[in-house]
Length: 187
View 1 (cartoon, rainbow, N blue to C red):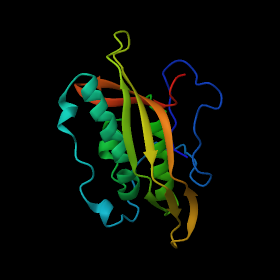
View 2: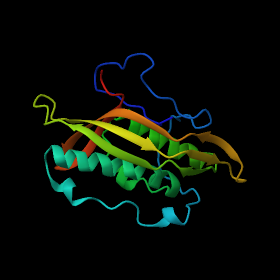
View 3: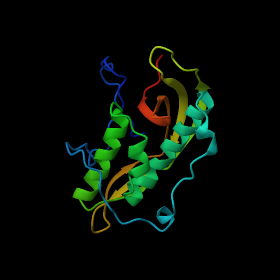
View 4: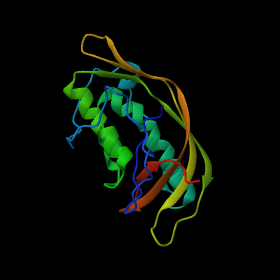
């Protein structure tokens, strides 16, 4: 199960379009994202490297930014370092909010997140929508399995490896890329 949720602005999502969180990792109402769960040795590295292609202000730059953003997912949840993820999250992004809520849940429950690395394949990159300023991208996201451990190291939830098709919408805010939504791909 890919842990994706999103929004598309003023229009409601079709019923059942939001992908659920694992049962033990439900979204909280807290907007705070300061946490420091026990990081694994590999997660203690500096995190994913920002690609130079993100400097482009076109569809190629949007694609590079989307791939980078999703590469921050497991890094953030294993280290608690949400700074880069938050700086790329648009306030309307439901996936972003749900992921930051997940981080809060981990801290509040003294839980540890393992796995969940995402590999993103851009299938279709569209030019900017002149009306909205959004660059839509159709992607396939492969996510490694996830395990959530309680404070004693006991497994409290597991999510199998998954592959999903998604739509990511990117925009520029103050000349920097932000994620507006990560949601199901339109049919």
